[in-house]
Length: 265
Image (tube, rainbow, N blue to C red; front, top):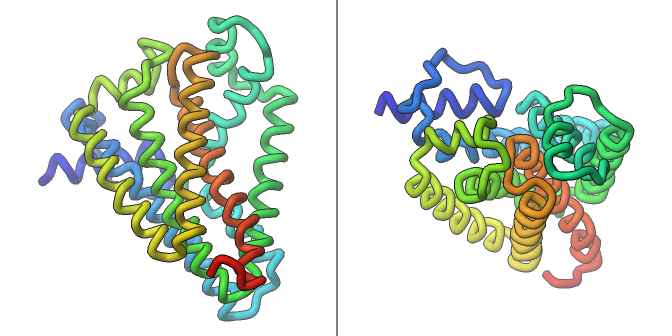
């Protein structure tokens, strides 16, 4: 039981800014770390629902609430995955050979394409939430997105465990070596099945579209990881997580228009 608690602490210490009691980063304390990775998404989803509810309850201006909703994942994670999004965007935009792309991933400087990607990413989030946060009837759609923060982390964890590693000495390779791959993968798959059921129960069509969208983005993640980098890394995994979440948000934003028109109830 103590080992599981330590794995929980290591997962939150690594992938979030939520204060945690100290735990040694030993192999035993990282063995089941990915089993707890999706629960950071639970925190983000819970805060997202809370902010949306309070915004409606107390009548805050939609623009203000939308801005807070966009920043919730950044506040919880410290932007660790956005950093991967920007680094990977720079590497993909370089059109260099594979070894050079991997070097760009390690470069701490942000290039022009990283800046452009950051702008597009946050504008896309703002636009999606502007469409979703327009009345109490869309709270259930925001609920689907809140579960999506767990879905993205389940898929990201599965990718880290099962995809080839682009670098044998990278952080992802180290995490994979220390984790119990088969058990962690199976636990994440069980989570995914339960989350898919939850999303579909909230709104069958909307939940199905969001979940299928996440799976398609996961396929795209595997494609670019293998084609351009020869495997995954921590940065590429963060890239996937970001585009998966904003992708689900945009899908829900588009179909939510039908909700107001009373189509596809």
